[in-house]
Amino acid sequence: MAVVTEKAYAKINLGLKIVGRRTDGFHEIISVMQTVSLYDRLTLIERAEGIDVRCLGAEGVPQGEQNLVHQAAALLKKEYGVKKGVNITIQKRIPVGAGLGGGSSDAAAALRGLNRLWKLKAKDFELALIAASIGSDVPFLLRKGTAIALGRGEILNYLKLTEPLFYVVVYPGFAVSTKWAYEKRKNSLTSESKYVSFIFSLKRGVTDGRLPFQYVENDFAQTVEKRYPLIREIREKLLSAGAKVASLSGSGSAVYGLFGDPYRARQAAEMLQCSKWSIFVCRSVGENEN
Image (cartoon, one colour):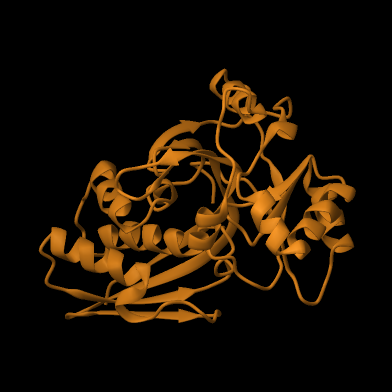
């Protein structure tokens, strides 16, 4: 019986700006996206037929055909005319509804794992096309690393960091609706935005501690923090603990603080300990890292 396992890494957004609304109903964005060492684990076991997806370790995860992993498996099965089926078990560690891309990363991991399990030999761009039809973050999460994301998030310009980055990620214990956040957000990208300077620094090849992290901006922050004051409180606590920058990931609810080294990150995590919060110390994960 063939078995494959895959890690589904979380992502953070080092800033996120909304450029405009598309004719297809999606939003144009610009964001620096990065995989970090917090991950779910998927176990895929071949079966004679059918798709069964089970999720362990989290509540509120869509079941059956509503689960993005189920959708990914069904699309790949149809696209390549696969007759065999699969049992997929998801061991969840990435919080649900946190802006960390957990569901999208699980779907991407399913595509990678099934490509191996069913021996499809699908090329990266072929998987990316299927990934884009599942969700905006799924193409980025097919691989590890850091990228400037444009369009819906599917146009990716990958970067190579010269040194790792270290994060404390705080999940406050509740989710924020991405749909609600997009409806309520007010900001947009302009040529005067400080975030443009951050993007230009990356494009010039500055990918180490000299980056102007103080220019990281998230268009959801003002609206989300007004609705959920605890998120602002967490961000301020991270800054007080020495973070170079603290911000929402995506539309939240998770807040991350960026630190110069793992020791300072661990110190900050200890300072922020709260029984109602989930706190993770993470590092950036590059393409060839595990």
